Image (tube, rainbow, N blue to C red; front, side, top):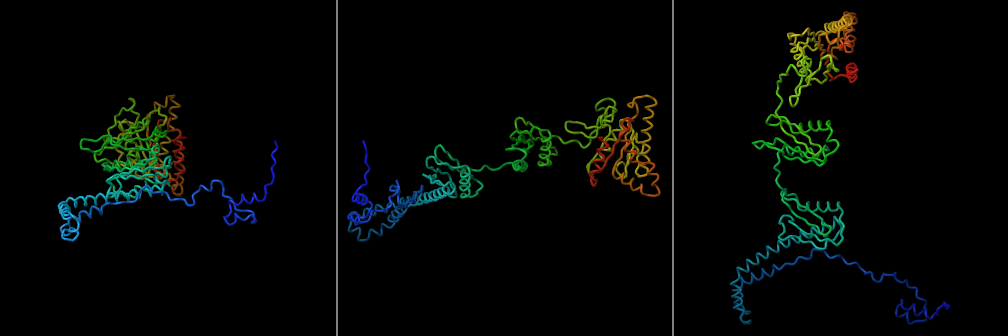
Length: 510
């Protein structure tokens, strides 16, 4: 079958086009063809103007005027009984008399109604505020806002906000809404607001909970604040672990998220020092100690008895040879000592520290312990105050203070070393059979500076050049070990150049 597409008649085209034209033009067959643009598909179903969304909180309506008018009518009933209205209406006087007898109950009812309406108005205002805050922060129009009755007088007590089905609220938007709710309520210091979004129920719950009073001690709060503000631990929490009989906190437990650093001994030592400094001195005089359990993510700070100011070190520390000189006592009665025996791989001792760092105390302790064990010693003190008073100790060979005499002593010590080495070579004995001798050279940099200045003096330049104390001391640092001589130089690093310290390290450690 063939379908022939024929061109339609002009009259038919005019009749079809007439549907889109006005009534006056539709009846004229002689008019021009219709050129009106037809609407796009679906345009007819679109509303001409978009209606505004209905608010979730309706208008506020009150019935207080009715209650107030009833109470007022009851009080003014006797005046109304004498009017012509009571004569015109049958039984009006009896009704007015009965109403007057209920004037006080009606007054109480009106007052209660007024109080209820005030609370309703307050809840209405809070509901409007919540609706506005939700629309501004999340751009969602709530379906229903319910404020708990009775509402809070000064601030919101609790509320429920119904959301449109499938409403999506991003975490940032939820945080902004929570901040807005808390900001509108103000900071009372007694309550805080919790805002929870139940996405499966399309509901937001707002509750007000009282803030528990902070009964923590200032030391407890200082620890928690410092750890929370720092980056030492992740999610730290400080709790009181123990108290004494008087209620004084003597132990704290710090929980944290375990990490690789928490298991390192160096990291633990730094944290121990920081926590002890943060805690400060305890009123009982005891010191703070720390016990770590990094595998379980916590540490315990506790108080321990303070170290005594004076400790009597035992003579035999390691063996019966009495060749270990103690100079400090740590925790758990752990003694630190200088091994001056012939088997020691560190026969010399270098004490480095700033002024006032305790170098003199260490020197005096070591020399006192050497005197107790029968080990002779000699020393050089250019400041004339560090080794003063040691001349009368048993085994003290000499203590010199002058720079020239110090150069003579260093050269004599060098000669003693050479004589000992020659004696070992001739007698074919072990160096361990030689008697020990300790040489102390305090303020090494001060003494070396004096020697350099004396080398420029014309009177004693030749003598200092012949003694060569710096060269003799360098030979002692290298060869004195095998001769049974132990060196104890004490440089003061404050004000000294870094390269000087590197020189000392070079000759001491090689």
